[in-house]
Image 1 (cartoon, rainbow, N blue to C red):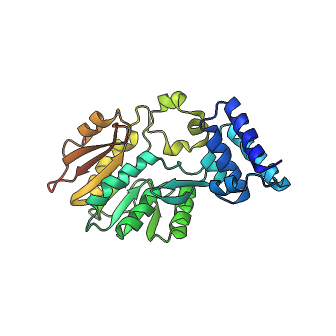
Image 2 (cartoon, rainbow, N blue to C red):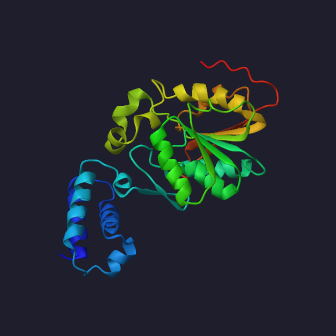
Image 3 (cartoon, helix red, strand yellow):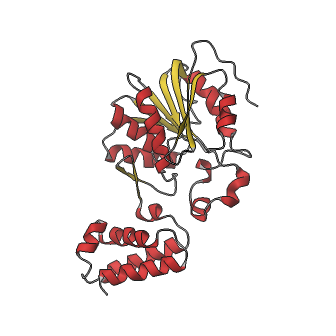
Length: 283
């Protein structure tokens, strides 16, 4: 069997199982097997499929048919133009999260240090460190996630300090100029509407934000108020239908702004800590 035929067979299997983007998925999996890029597959489409390739390709197709995300099979996901290592211990970085970076960059000029709370794979922290050249610190409650994040920082030559703690509990008051976060915000009651790839394979600790989706925000916002210096920025990703509630949580902050994604949906909310003390009472 040549590579062309293997691709067609893989595509057909994925199509029959209603897997999204079957052709692209087959290409990515086969390219991962042979250790080449997708362009190489087309340039060598008549090359014979080696037995070891066939074994691994079949296994990867089987895993994908059972719902395992392609990124967990290959162990990689691109984010902001860079390749990040991902495992089932971390949330797969989404293109929408790049809007956190876009919102943070202009607010990070001259800012140091920057804190990424709930770093997961380290995609936000590593990207900000490389794009700004500033001192970046990242926290996560999961030691397994921090190992993945530290590997990504090492592989991409980014200087990030990683700390295992709950939110920002390990840090002193008034330490940071910018706090960024992509916290869990899916309501626990909404698990049934998630794709099986997400619901069954991505870490629950990085997905669910309590019964209403706001449990972490209720803790994160006052924690950021403690950690930020006066006039420091808080930048958070959230669901498009959560902005009104979060704006209420940030009523004592200044310069509250909502950033839309490429689909025109609210995706990121930013706010500046006022110079006066913030007295927070979360509903």
